Image: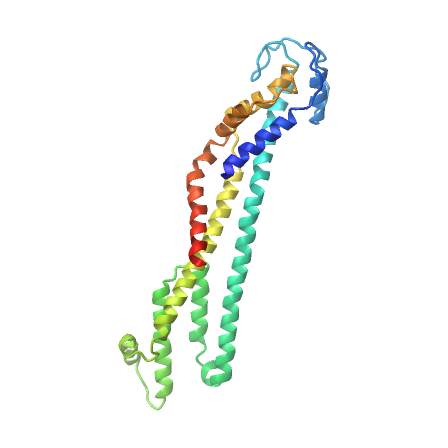
Length: 303
């Protein structure tokens, strides 16, 4: 069942329950309407005790009525408010889920990166001491770029990793041949032949494959959560059009004006009104289902 369908079902169910107020309906008296009207929190000032001519009504039928123009306006605003509140409440769980999942994963992955950086730094400091500390910026820059990529920065992972191994080779070559002085052109020439010389064996290729796979998946996943959160936030902010307010008022509260506050809307009628009010959101349904389906496929591949 899609998100929009849940809104339709919940709203129509609550509409039926909210309109079930009232006892025996009297033909000419507005006593039931007065009770139902005040139960909604409205004042009974100027609310008629008996039906009157309804030529003044602009939304509800203009026959004999229990509604004044002011009552009709207030009931229209009540329809809009109830609809907006229901959409907000129905989408709240979805929005908070995206927010919490994004926060948890983001914190987990960044903590994982920080721990990896600290662990490597501690191990190399113990193993190589001052030699490593004097060249530690090569590794610090690597983790800085990895974090920048993960957080959405314009970083080419392949080029960045190639640059890391080239810089590391240049530093090691200088350290192993410290009795000589090498020009920048000479060092650059050495780095160009890294693939042919393979000074680090097969480690760069394996590490590149692992890092690329992990970071592309992590960034795609966290960005997907961000997109889902933003879409859910926008969909929850319904722009209730005048035509929607009229349709809601006719369905929910025009029975009040006719002296029938206990009259229930049928399911099909209610769903048709909801479809009209949520037409823009309904257009997103196919794309939203593809988005959710893509997330499930991603989880399956990860497993």
